[in-house]
Amino acid sequence: MRDEIRKLLVEKVALVGERVYEPYVPSLQIEKPYLVVKEGTKEVPNDWAGYTTTFEVWIFEKFETFQNVDALRDKIVAVLDNAKIVAGGKKYLIRYLSTVGDDFWDEELQALERGLVFQVFSLGWLNGETYAPDPVDALKEWTKKTWTMRDEEGNAKISDGKSVVVTATGDVVQGNFYEIEGFFGAAMTNGKAGDKVVLNIEQAEYSTVQVVDGATFSVGSLVYWDGTAFTNDVGTSNRLVGRCTSYDSVNKVLTFILGPQAYGNVVFLEHLEGQE
Image (tube, rainbow, N blue to C red; front, side, top):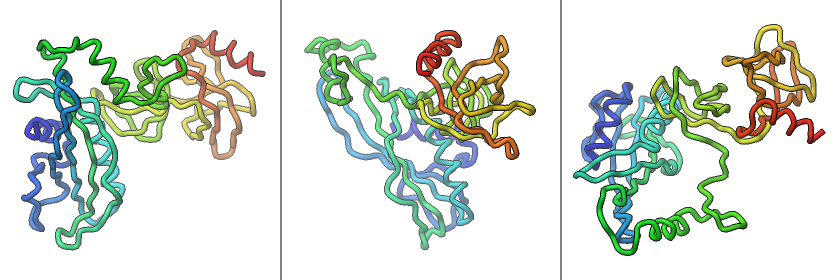
């Protein structure tokens, strides 16, 4: 499994190239940046689901700026989070969990270091194998235990829906806004066409300078997206995305409340007007 993860990193994280190593390899002489993959312990929650395991990807970067470490982290997460791999004829799903504590300076290796934690889920139930109890019943039970958030009706709830993973159709810059695969929000990771990136779609207040030249806004006015920037122009192809809370016309800084993702322009407009 570690070999498959290493292949993904080597193929898709161009900044490190072939420099993805085992834990015992790092030394002062190795060119930076490079990565180290450490596999953790395996857990077997039940027979049908197979095992889960954690692993860590450690970033070793030159002592220049933590922005370089941030850029590597974003790229690694975009490559591995939600990736499916096949190892030993079995299918697995990778999910990003968190960082390993605080960043630190390694005096011995002369490197800035940051660890990223991932979890690998066995997708044994997709391998055509038979199990007892029935996989559907077991999946329901596993969902209850693994994803603890539940709504009042008891239906499975995966998350609060504040972000979504989509496939980039072009260059994506963290902090900028994009409309990708029907979702509109602020990019939480960097990426290029074909990469998995994360959009923040939480209905919250945002600030941006991605404003069309000549556009004007006032408190309470509707905000539209023309495909590349925010505008006050309704337009036949522009997407209604929210309502203005303030606008600095000198510096072209727009602050707005992002609207729901599920509505089309007409329904969304009715929704907004119903709140007035």
